[in-house]
Image (cartoon, rainbow, N blue to C red):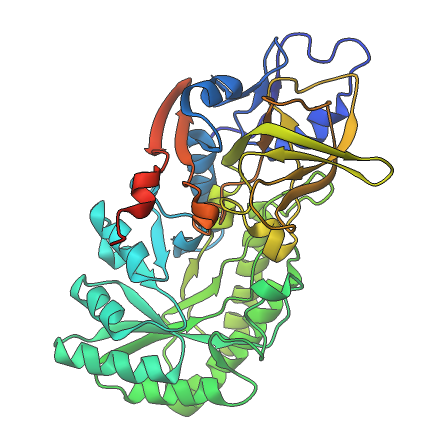
Length: 457
């Protein structure tokens, strides 16, 4: 596995330029990122401005090396300190057929949350036994499709699903492996919209009010279900380590009680995902090794305390696999100066391809791909083109003076931007390309107006 590195070529640091722009911001870009001798951004051996010339904007660029390295880091960092680990990629972060093929090559499992994500996996021949089916309102058709595909495990989220799945499995003559998703009442200190492990959440069976125990009892009694363990997911992105340890303590104390009262056999345990990535230079994320040590140490302590055999450990990174690997490229258009207030610089994308700033107050940084270093800087707000005042990608960032036609590169855009995208204002969805050792592969062509209207009467 290649080490993380940032290469600066030529004379980019000569004279009175601002090297902190690179030292602070470039490490948030994919691992192969560098600045060439002409002061332009290069990703995966391909010049970013050249990518825009060939494919247009908005454009999402993914780096093959960063994707594969992150898969291998999770497998290695957990695998070297724990005997049985399954790393299952959380498809909600991004699910495209070419990505699914890459993940299969890297030996990753999949965590799907819909029949649509399942369909993508099936389309590329993904091994179904390595797929776990999540979600708080799986419909009967979705559950039936999963069982027909021989999906590995269903993570049961509520009593309705528990009963429904038991009936469907019986009709198909199957005994389906399940995990129960429990809510341990642990706050991960992230955005309220992405906090899921507390009592007041639409997800999971709460431990505090006895619903989790009732779910264990009913699952154990269901003739067509095989309860193999429990699942916890606290939220995302989680920058702190202690919530993982706290969630595991609660979950394993609960598992001990369930063994005493209902004979629960804990063959698998999942602390879920939620692993953070670095979006800005001011807020680094823990390395994979730190997450691995915290989770494994907490699980080992709990197993020793309660006399459990070590269960299979299932971890579910999504953002942490694809987030840093992706860069969004936009072209600059209009400019609006409000003296003493703000300067808006508009680009040709925005909330249609990245709604995270609008709904999560997500923070990003950026570079001007064709002029990475510059002696002159200005403070601007990067605005999107959509008809919403809240369509702002980055507020108050220092960049070289921007003019129409400049290419703005926003890193850490690989997770959630594309799958949460829309055709708001009837805008076509952007193209997606992979870069690898100087070569490009189109992962998704740019959508056309005809594509948008093809399902309409």
